[in-house]
Amino acid sequence: MDDLRLLDTVERYIKGEMQPDERVHFEQLRKTNAEVDQLVVEHTFFLQQMNRFGEWKKFKSLLSNIHVDLAEKGQINSARLQGKAKVVYLWNRYKRVSAIAASIAVITTLVISSLVWIIAPASPRSQFEELNKKFSQLEDKTRKQAKEIDRIKDKATSVPQDIPFTTGGTGFIIDAKGYLVTNAHVVEDAKQIAIQNNRGEYLVQVVFQDTERDIAILKIEDENFKPYSSLPYGLSKQTAKLAEPIFTLGYPRNEVVYSQGYLSAKTGFNGDTLSCQIEINANRGNSGSPILNRKGEVIGILNGRETNTQGFAFAVQSKYIFDVIESLKKESSSRTLRIPSRSSLIGLDRTEQVRKMQDYVYMVKVN
Amino acid sequence: MNSELQEVGLLKGLAAGDRKIIEGIYKDHFNMIQSLIVNNNGSVDDARDIFQEAMVVLYEKVRTGSFELNCQLKTYLYSVSKRLWLKRLQQNNRLFTQEVDLEATIPVDEEIGQHEKRDAEFELMSQAIQRLGEPCKSLLEAYYLRKMNMQDIALQFGYTNSDNAKNQKYKCLMRLKKLFFSEYKNGNTHG
Image (cartoon, rainbow over all chains, first blue to last red; front, side, top):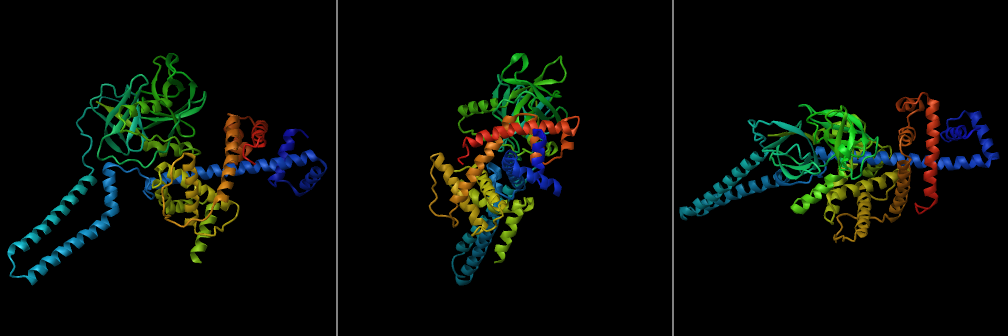
């Protein structure tokens, strides 16, 4: 019996897939042959380890999926709340308390004013007026608050419709607070920039540009924007491996377009070491698209293609995003970006991965 | 008594990998752990990591068929998370500032010790699989972790028949075992 068949037999024995008579026969062999016995013991242990490892991995990826889902549905407070979102959040949280407080205030005012009126009918009229004024002040405040809240909830104000956007590309979220990354050449000489996808349309500002690495960081400056709770993908600090399968989402059309390929060379155009070469279908508008590996980690940003050859393109390696963020931090210390390094897309099939990340990839429109 | 029965039901669901039940446990306990971590020098991301690790500890426990926690599920998750976070803080020389416990805790050192040992073993397996490279990695994952059958594997990986796939799988498996046991016997898992 050769080794392959022996191991196969041992595996069937461990899994209990043997017919009864074969099993008896094998157990006899096990008793007489110490080597076979040793192999059974070792392989049982190994398969157990594998099985448990598989379950552990599955459970961990299930947990991160659940986390993202619950955070999206708002069933756990995982959002990093800031600005307007915080006001809305605090309002939602304390609206019952404030409603109770307001009604108590109203009742107290009414009771006191009527008491004053009943007990001291002869007292000067000014006192009653004063209370009355307080009451109306309170009402006024409540009205103002209601207006303020309406303003926050109101989604009507948006990107002005009359800006003629002339060029564009793709960008994707790298910090849930509303920071995106795209190529520096996409936003070069831009007067106004807006981003758009199914989630909405927002105005953005360039906060940092590195033309050498061709990376730009944008920040969403739009009151309608609600921060994300977390990102589905992570950013890889490692250089991708040759022949690694990759995929991308981008906006070469007005519609998000999926494309897949593989890493074909570790350097980019003319041996450029900042970038790498990928075999993927890229078109105008794909600049700035995230390039992801099968685990759902961003390994690069698509930034161009060779003009006279079809089918291959170039991507800036994602580790340089971290460098750019470091320089941004040095420039303005108040900006600390939280870049996710862990992907929760591991183990999902491609359609699920794409569905989960669609909301985080935007068309970048430049005027 | 009734709630105890309910919790056993939850734990059985967890052991079976029932997504609905796991989601329920997650939803009911995450915020508590998050405030523990965030109030003690941790970030939102730390909270997620610690809570998920505590869930893994619980999962490992119920996987062995033991549904007796000797305390409420809430107390268990809180105790494990707190212990894990203390350890993490000690490693980074940071301080745990909380003086009053929000919840009662129970000793969980033994469980965390076991958990760390298992984690090290899984890490070993993970590294061994990584070092295999393609196509071995995908092939073995398909067969042993996703439990695909040989015909489907042959089809997906482009082998002409399932015997060829089997042959390749055998070679990969031998390499993986060699990688795994050489590290394992070197005592890299402390046992």
